[in-house]
Length: 151
Image 1 (cartoon, rainbow, N blue to C red):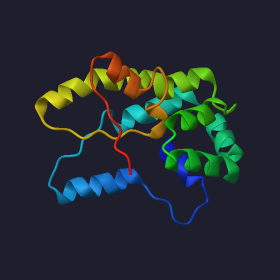
Image 2 (cartoon, helix red, strand yellow; image 1 turned 30 degrees about the horizontal axis):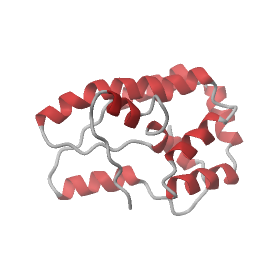
Image 3 (spheres, rainbow, N blue to C red; image 1 turned 45 degrees about the vertical axis):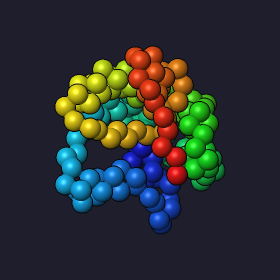
């Protein structure tokens, strides 16, 4: 979803942190895995939006929406990112639950097993971090110490 959204920004120079993390891992000869498969992501999108809803959503994205999200992200205000997404009328509460909360809950169940196998770096989209159902709160609730990596 974030990749689709970012493609709609209309910016000539977008920075994809996921690609940078993948390149750093390759340079360090470290494995890269995901918390879910691409096919699972597509299925979640299909369950959350009809084709018409997705096209309408992408049509509604304005440069101001993008600028506001980028500003909140750059200022490291993850709650602000989540608030902007939550107030977007084109994504209903059910879609937000499927796209964010359900996935966050699943990931928090998978993460401990992955950490038991080896030292692990996890990266999440900003909207997955904030709120009571965000990955940070869910990990803390499960007893983990979570600290932000800033700058």
